[in-house]
Picture 1 (spheres, rainbow, N blue to C red):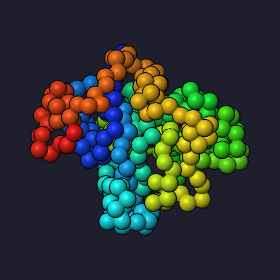
Picture 2 (cartoon, rainbow, N blue to C red; picture 1 turned 60 degrees about the horizontal axis):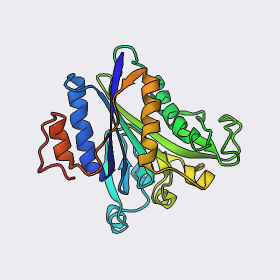
Picture 3 (cartoon, helix red, strand yellow; picture 1 turned 135 degrees about the vertical axis):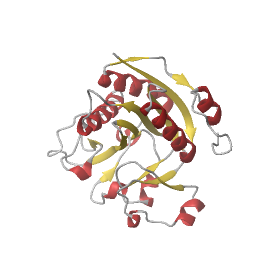
Picture 4 (spheres, helix red, strand yellow; picture 1 turned 120 degrees about the vertical axis):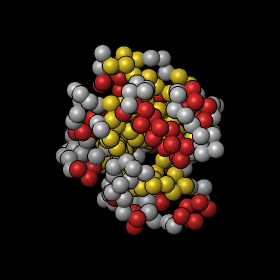
Length: 259
C-alpha cells in the first residue's frame, strides 16, 4: 500500500518553495524520500508555465514588482497563472509508477481533490470540455449544483492545475481559490482564457476557510484518490526551509534558500 505524508508550509514566497520541490523531486526519483504533498499559500506571484505566452502577462516585471507581485518562470505545464494569499496550493511529489502512469488520471485526481475541498463549503464543480479548460470549474449561477460543462450558465474557474512529470514522478500540482483577491487575475490572461471568468469559494458563498484550515481536507482527499495510508499532517509554518530541507535529508544550501 502507498504511504503519503504532508507538510503545511504556511505563506511562502515562490522561489524557495520551487527549490524545495526540485530537491524533493530528485530525492523521490531516487527513492530517498517517499510520496509527499506540500500544502501552502504563496505571497503574490505571477508564474509562467512551459506553454506561457508573454503577452498574457499584462504588466511588465517592474510594474508587477511595484504592486508587490513577483514574476517567476517555472517548469510546470500550462500558461500563465497567479498565486496569492487565500489560495490553497498543493504540490504533490508523487511517484506515479508503476500502476498510475496515466497523465489524464493524475489530472483527474487533482481536480477531484479540489472538488472535495469545495464540496465541504457547499460548492459543486467539475470540468469543462476542451484541453484549454483544464482545471476545476463551478457555475456561478448555481454554485451548489454543477450541471455539467455543456450546461453551465456562468462557468468560473476556481482551481488551476499544472504538473511536471520526470520519470513518472510528479511535482507542481493545483491552486484553489478560497478567499483569493481576484483582482490579481486582472494582471494576466489566466491560463490564456479571456472568454471566461475566475472565481473563488468566498465569492460564490460569502465565506471560505483559510488555506491552513482546508489543508487537512485536501490531504485526506488526495490520499483517498491514491489509495494511500496517511502520516499525520506536519505543520511547519515558521520553520525556515533550509532547516526543513536538512530535516528531510535534502542537503539544502542555506545561502540559496530563504525562509
